[in-house]
Length: 117
Image (cartoon, rainbow, N blue to C red; front, side, top):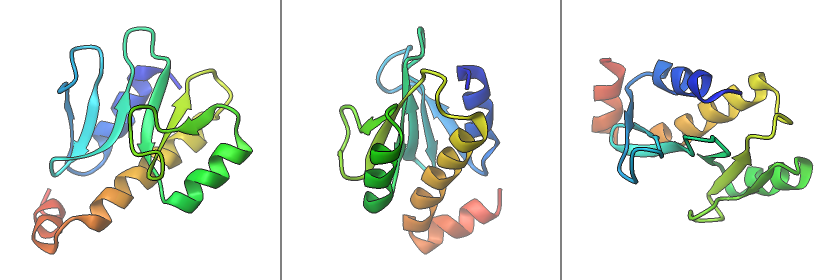
């Protein structure tokens, strides 16, 4: 999946925003101020996504291009290498799952605000 397609998909999710807190080459995608995805821009080599710990283990065992989250909590994040081995449809699903994990952990007041988007 190309970075522009990833960017468009992340920003299509309700309340999602793009920020660059780690520099201009590292877009971070957040919902209600909480990160759900981080990409390496420029040469776009990988993307970090939040996962349920058990799911993270399963994905790392099943897909060689899925690794423990680089510079992240390795229990709750994965890094997906952009080597073309992950189908776009599956990548979009993982992005949506990451987003939903973050939304599910938001306080009720923030989820109500998000519903208003």
